[in-house]
Length: 71
Image 1 (cartoon, rainbow, N blue to C red):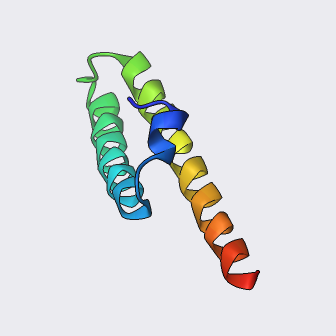
Image 2 (image 1 turned 90 degrees about the vertical axis):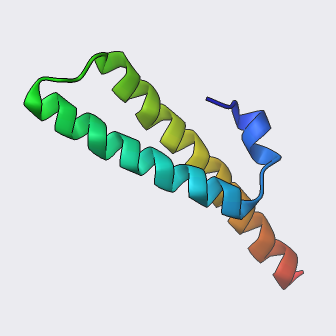
């Protein structure tokens, strides 16, 4: 997955799209975990960290936009 530096270069729409994709992936991981078909539990943790990284960058972008509008 992309680093935070690479994610900051993406638009807010791209970040939202990636976050939605990762949420779907996490849902599938959860189903696979419950059914015993999860190939790599470490991948699930990586997906969670990637989602958190994307949401953090997205929040930073939206807060910066709000500050720019107020100023």
